[in-house]
Image 1 (tube, one colour):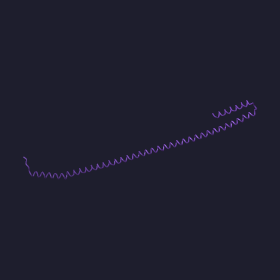
Image 2: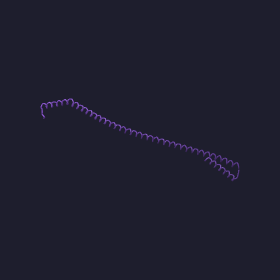
Image 3: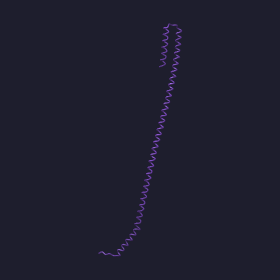
Image 4: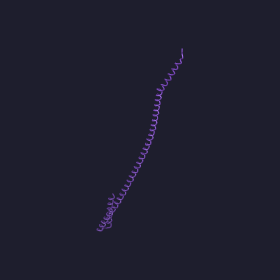
Length: 167
């Protein structure tokens, strides 16, 4: 049968209390300290990860800002180059037009001078021919019909001379 012994219960309680105190000092204390250290380590790791994430987001924002600035700068440089190219193109076209106008004016002047020279030469030749014809007419005392024939020959010769120069 079962018997309850007071001293046995007392020693069991004392053993349990001693065991509890020993476990508290040598087991629970170090285990709790290790768990607190690990909790602090994990918290510091979370904090550093959060800080690293914040830095990464800041760097990303800075990178995007510099990328946008670079895009704006490249667009500005491209527009500037286009406008300089357009201005240079317009300057060259204007210069070519001016040169062409000058060349056309020189050509017109040269043509007018050649025309005047040809007219003077023709007048001189006609005067020479007229003097030759008048001399022939005066040397030969002929009839009015022969004079008319010589005059017509003179006109034909002057016309042929003019056609030769014109072509």
